Length: 341
Image (cartoon, rainbow, N blue to C red; front, side):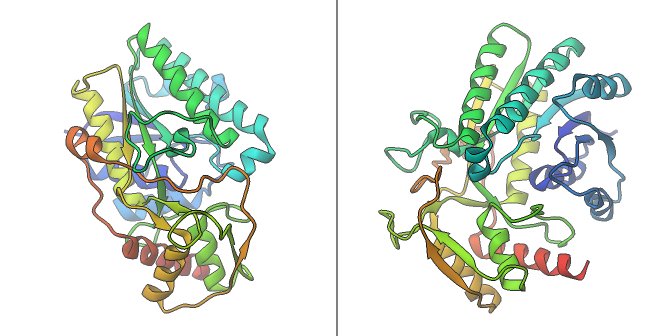
């Protein structure tokens, strides 16, 4: 007997598509809504190749109430929601703040209103380590202070967590906010992976696109930070590990295991890696050299942040399984498969 239906907003995107695969692997029936503004429809066929299941797909926008209402009328037996649909580029958010506030904040509000109208009470929210801003102490725990956001993107995640905090107090909604650090890598099949449209905002796709010849050079933003080699430090985790955490979180809600109406978990490896270390590891593991230069610091970037994952390990029952080498090798295999396409 199949497990319940789970609505995945933004389910054709990078993390969403991997989570859809892991939901199938765990016996769930995912239903995807995605407006395809920042994703490609062919990924749906790739999910089918990996899982042997053709995903239920609804082209729509979570900011559009009518789209959600139509989907929830067709699928009245949805048991929970994993909410990815949001813009996510720090640099772009600095340049286009209203775009981010409208999409990320309004999208959550409309989604919550429509879920409440249908009595759907289980929500896993895609949050971010950006809510910590530039932390005073690393690694950060879930109780570390939420600092003033360094970017409108980070601020939308803070606002959305506040919306959830207020909503669960006065409704039947139960939520888990997953504050994840820096997802990279790709599925072992090389059929799905990170697929930035236009110039990548994230480090690893820029590395792989430069290594394969799509980009002339990689610019490392900032070489004078107070870190091991002067470049920013982040906690990189494999996207498949991250996807499995979302399945574990929705199971926790469905099984009434939560101890609070809103639970928060950091998702990372617990280890920081510098940008230069990522570049060096990529070259060492793939044998592919590429051009990179150092540039000025970028607005909105924090110096270093990495996770204390004790709570996720002990309470959520989740821990990363893959190391930086595996993350970069799978990302490279995905880039090579894209070039063949």
